[in-house]
Amino acid sequence: DTEVTQTPKHLVMGMTNKKSLKCEQHMGHRAMYWYKQKAKKPPELMFVYSYEKLSINESVPSRFSPECPNSSLLNLHLHALQPEDSALYLCASSQGGDNEQFFGPGTRLTVL
Amino acid sequence: QKEVEQDPGPLSVPEGAIVSLNCTYSNSAFQYFMWYRQYSRKGPELLMYTYSSGNKEDGRFTAQVDKSSKYISLFIRDSQPSDSATYLCAMSGDRGSTLGRLYFGRGTQLTVWP
Image 1: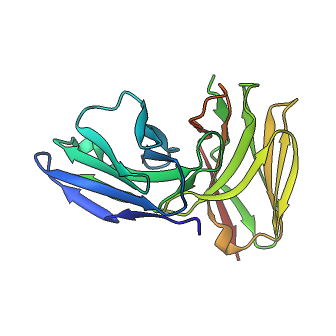
Image 2: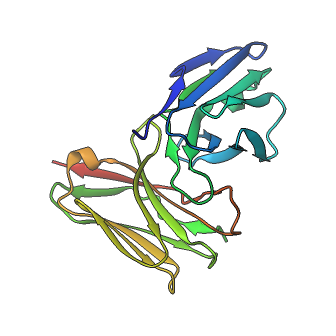
């Protein structure tokens, strides 16, 4: 099973709202990733967790706050977002290192 | 110069055609090469994963890596309308890190018409 699940599928929020995106994998993977993808662009790396510790933060604004409660779960907390943050947010997981990364279906976020 | 170059297309072919998708790269340290297929408004799906130079075949798909030319290809045989999607190349292994940072091409939009 190479499934990564993400909820919700769609999210619409105002600039003053607080919301969270969730990601789950049951493949025993040790690394989990958040990506942001704008239309007709490749995914852009935001955060990497390795063994539940934040290993990479690609200078992401603090209005995005990641959390890894355990090895299977990854959250992305959103607060005071801007309309330009509207995008497809993708979660991925891998065994770590240069092993294959498997992506979830994404959450389509719209910020009004 | 971007690290990974990929012609965005669009590429339009008739059903049954052989499709060739390509990427070039500049970083000779890349060791791992991937092709992802992404349908509109969906997450990328891993199609092929290869290490170093050589060919890998999986059904109608063949991935080729030529490290000497810094060139990778994905061939799709007997293309089907269901192959219509954006194809992203990706690569990693640039610093021997344990974190597997992926470097993506821009993606090529493919349409296979019946």
